Every structure is written in structure tokens, then in C-alpha cells.
Length: 190
Image (cartoon, rainbow, N blue to C red; front, side):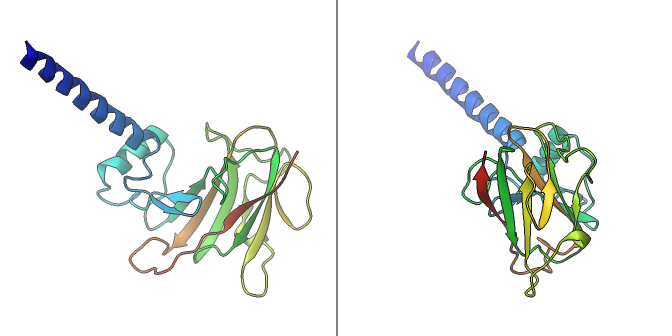
């Protein structure tokens, strides 16, 4: 009897751990196949001829059109650099350098991947529209309230994510070395 109870307990623990880790890998999964730089996370194996199984699971669960490896790379941030969730009631400043790429876009989305750009504005901010400092760094303000400078105007309330898509980039490839991503700093909240 004792043997049967231990066997059943072992099977229950194994199933709980197995299903729990599988669920984590498919929902968040940043420990399996994702590259994280500050608050930004990317899946560099997306678009590869044979991505790892965790990347395949992430692609299937996300159900979004993905760029091929040679086309570009998408970074997503759900928190600021202080690890606080991004909130549409706050204004954020993106500061620093973007990895080398031919072109990039910055957009804000909700949990359902619906774009949060304000009505009558572009869906994303393009690299050609950004004012840069003499050293090549950028400063972009993101929020629902009007601010001077380069601004990504948003609408709505609640949590959101920032999506930085780099087109024709060597970021996270074998050809790149040090990669720095813009920091996301909370400025003020309503």
C-alpha cells in the first residue's frame, strides 16, 4: 500500500512540474530561447530554419505574423527599466541607442496586440522621424499627454507593451558584439 501511495504521489508531482514548466515556457518562456536586454525581450530563433521547440511554442501561442531571421527582429518591453509594468496613465522616456539596423519602428500595443496609437496619428514611430543627439542617441517620449520633442502619442488606459522592430539588423546574430537597447524611464503619472 505504501508503495502504491508513493508511486501515485511521484506521478502527481511529475505531472504538475511537467505541465507547469510547459505552461511557463509557452506563456512567458523568457528562460527558454529568448534574449533579454534590460526591459526588452526578443526571440532570435524566430525565422530560423529549425527553431528550438520553445520558440515554436511561443510562435504558435502568439499567432502573429513573424519576420524571417534575415528580415528583422522584434523586441517587446512590458516593464520599464525599474521593472515596473508599463501603464498608460504614465509618461515614459526612451533614452539611449538602438542597435544598428536599416530601419526601425516603435509601437505600443495592449495584451491582445491591438495598437494603442492615438486616433488620427501613425500606428508607429519610424526611425526617420526621430530627433537624435550629436552622439547618435535618441530620446523618445511615450504617453497619452502632449509633451515636447519626439513623441509617440497613445490613447487608452491600463497596461501596455512597447514593440521595437528592427529591420535588416545584425542584432543578436553571430556578427554582432555588444548590444545596447534604449532604457525606459518613467517620467510622471496622472
